[in-house]
Amino acid sequence: MKPLTLHLVIHGRVQGVFFRESMRQQADSLGVKGWARNRADGTVEAIIQGSADSVDTLLEWARRGPPLAKVTHIDQGTGSGEWLTFDILPSSH
Image (cartoon, rainbow, N blue to C red; front, side, top):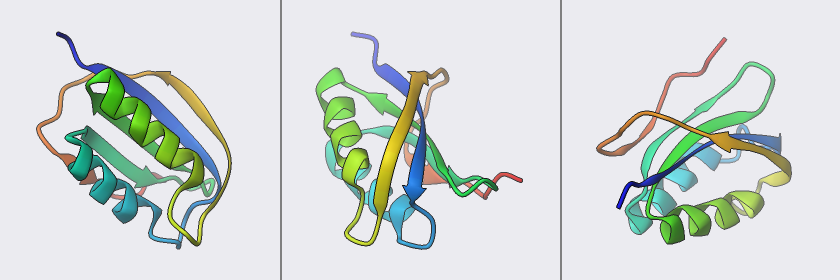
């Protein structure tokens, strides 16, 4: 079965609160692949890829984030590509 791939832009207080590292840990525990990075506009961008159940679980987690985060909303679309791990990428400018 082809994995589900989503592109996310997460808005709110999501930088400087260990969002990306916490997301990587959650992804690893769920077997989700992809990446996350900070963007210059203060959001976190991510690609998440895996089984529908695992991707849905990570998406639910992303709506809350780690304890210090305050997620206001998530822009969600279809993603593309193929990953072997979940990585934290350098910030985009």
